[in-house]
Image (cartoon, rainbow, N blue to C red; front, side, top):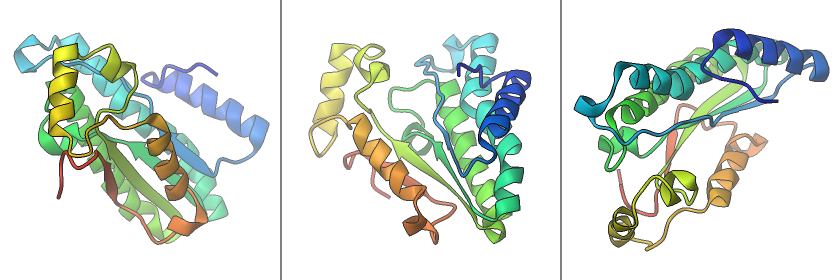
Amino acid sequence: MVVDVGCPVTVERACETILKEHGTVDTLVNNAGILSNNKVEETAVDEWHRLMAVNLDGAFYLTRALLPGMRKQRWGRVVNVCSLAMKTGGLTAGTAYTASKGGLGALTFSLAREVAADGITVNGVAPAYVRTPMVTEQLTSVQREALLRQIPVGRFCEPEEVARLIAFLVSPHAGFITGEIIDINGGLHMD
């Protein structure tokens, strides 16, 4: 279904439909996101609000709606797709995007502590420069070439690599991992 995750009413309705049709939700991957490369002085207030609504508020709305069922069954997995931008201040990303992903990281930590005793893990992944339209269409060829020179593995991340990491985090094999933000950036940032 198509849902504007930045709107709490549509998220609530969508979650009600999902729960009605499927009964429970075991796994939530908060992966909705929009990008802005505008730095602070070029960022309009409505742009700031839209990025926060989609990139941060949506994860809060979805988690709030689906967490009670996970708590009831005493098992669940939440993975938030953060970004390298939250750790670097945004190499090419703008201020609103960077701040929204930083907020998503903090939400990850807070939720992980809150629900760990309920058998629920909450983690994040922080990819950098995944070969998607955010990289191929929203960065110039000059920016892409400069980035490739900075990434030690010499290439952009493939979407499937992020998906495999998330698949591990939502599996029973990752039951003792919670409150972590796992980097997936080809060595561009090491901590």
